[in-house]
Amino acid sequence: MTTNAPFFIRDKLPSKKFCIVIMAALLGARAAQRRIRIWCAAAATGQEPYSLAMCLKELGPAIAGWRIDILATDLSTEVLEKARAGIYSQFEVQRGLPIALLLKYFTKIGEAWQILPELRAMVQYRPLNLLQDFSRLGTFDVVFCRNVLIYFDQPTKVDVLDRIARITDRDGYLVLGAAETVVGLTDSFKPVADRRGLCAPNPRTRASAAPPRLALVVGGR
Image (cartoon, rainbow, N blue to C red; front, side):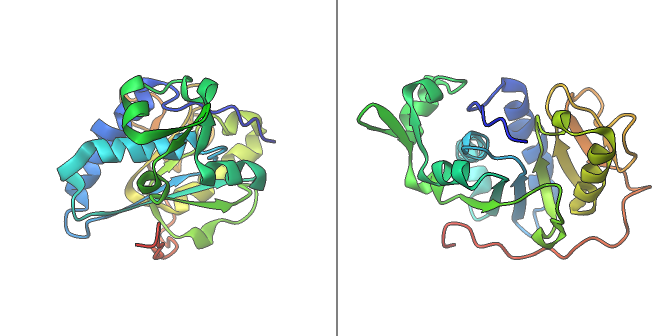
C-alpha cells in the first residue's frame, strides 16, 4: 500500500532530531571511520531524503571529509523516477519547506522548482518492497521508516521492525512517525527517552550476527 503524499521537512521535530541529536552522536561515534549510512525506507517522491541532504549540507565543515550515503527506497518505481528528477511544483515545495532552503537549494524551472544537482547526487534511489527480504542492503547507522507501519497489521509490523533491527548498527537509530511506536510490538528496539519517534536497537535482543556493511557508491563518489 502506498499513499505518496510527502512533505519537505514534514514537521520540524524529526529534522531537528536528525541534525542535532542523531548526527551529533554519530559524528562522535564514527570519528574513526568517517562514514555514515542512512536509509529512507519509504522515500516516495523524494522529499524526505532530500530534506536530510539539506540538513547535512547545513552542517557544513562539521562533515567535511566524511562519506555520508543516503539510500532511498520505495515500492513504486513511478514515484522514484520523480524523486530522481527532483522537480517539484510550487504547491509541493510549499509543503513544509522554509523559503530560505528553497532559494538556497533549488533552481526555478518555469513554474516548477528543481533541487540542485549536488543534492540529487547525495541520494541513491532503489525500488524495494519492505515485505520482502532487505538484508542484502547491509547495515545502517540511521533508518527512517516514518508513517509506514501504520498501514500494516500487527504481525507485519513486528516482522518489519525485527528485520530492520538486524541491519541497524548497535548504536544506530530508527526514526518512526509521530503516530508510530515500537512499544508493545517488539523488544528489538527501545524508545529513546524524551525523543518521541526516535528508537535505538536493544542490545539485549538484537541478533548477534548482522549483515555486512556494504559499500554503496552514491553520486559517483
